[in-house]
Image (cartoon, rainbow, N blue to C red; front, side, top):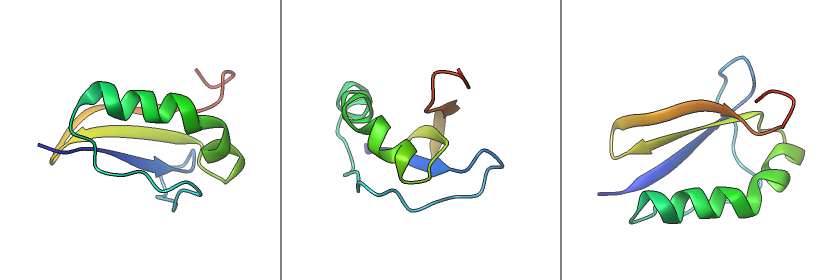
Length: 69
């Protein structure tokens, strides 16, 4: 199983993240990584993130800024 992030503009258009995530082996590792890098991702043009396990969407899109939450 691989946990992955998809990064998007607020309109749902996929964007390439300025910090490249890996494929994570656990949900906790994926969420910890996002917690460490969300500011850089937001500054680089990503407005929201969606977490998936393999091809199954777990949650999202989740806004990266506090005002959008």
